[in-house]
Length: 474
View 1 (tube, helix red, strand yellow):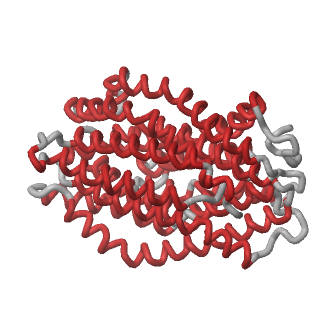
View 2 (view 1 turned 135 degrees about the vertical axis):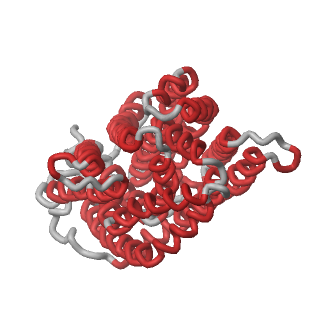
View 3 (view 1 turned 90 degrees about the horizontal axis):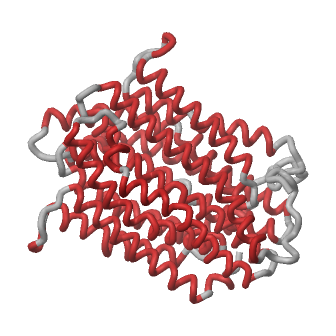
């Protein structure tokens, strides 16, 4: 059965090799797509670095604004999490019309929320950039102003075009919830290609285009998801035999009950996102208090380390889809086994990535052409970050199981403990040497991140073993 085919009900459940194959069938295309996201991320960093030579200011500006853009995407596309659980459960029950209406409803919610982000973000952008400028390390007034100006050029396009990104994220999430892996991959690949080409054209002024610098990267990044949205909508609106099709009569409608259910399931996920990203902002301030070279080194290291983080998201989406569909089909024991199999397969997948980060850090950071001291600092951070990779995978894959079951409340409090109990306080303590600890600078901030993921992985394992998520109503 191909990824495009109409699914058969999971009457016999999934066990043994069949379970492993189903997890990998969903995870591998997602990993490929997320790896392509990583390559695009790396390409952005490399192109920005090449455009400015020895000047780290554009890289520092990208590091200043990228976490904000990531936070906006994660927090304000959180309704996709609720929609994924609903779609997976309805597909498991073989109720394709209800799955389709849940998707239509989620797209309307995503467009409305994305538009709200654009309106509020446009009004608050200037004040927000001024505020971020004030967080840059003291004693660098001229550099701080230049960094903020460059960051503003990127952010304005990202905010203006945010509704497109919200639609793309929702389409990907609902398709994967339904068990469709190929279509989101194709759409994501084309969007990544469009992003890289657009960045190069507008950053360097190729083929007669205006040379817009970092602002051009923001414009290209904002427009790229449009390619994915157009492709996916064209396919699911015209092909009735898809796993998730909007061609089914009655599919194109906004269902208030589905909307309420989506919001109900997404509310704890929204709480988790707000807790994490509010903590992340405070965590990020510790980086901004360092010098421009440390900011640039962090950008390089994060760009490389995302090779490990994004594949974890692939297993998270696979675990959510498999768990939700098995619960919908009435196979709770198989859903429980799928949680641990997704976790084991995921860890086995990222161990080579962790080894590469640990032993190849200097080679990887050297490809960016930044100053030697910046590359050396980034390499030391990568070696620390390699230690968190297995724990990150455990956390993300088990979180996928909980989200596929619609049980998002434990994820919220686990996020609160990991982020505010460990990452945030230890980032400041270890970076600047409070309470008698040595001041480790950027490396201390990365150590705090490792502690966060270790704690969260242990808590996720505890919650999954309790099995309460298996009785969640969706």
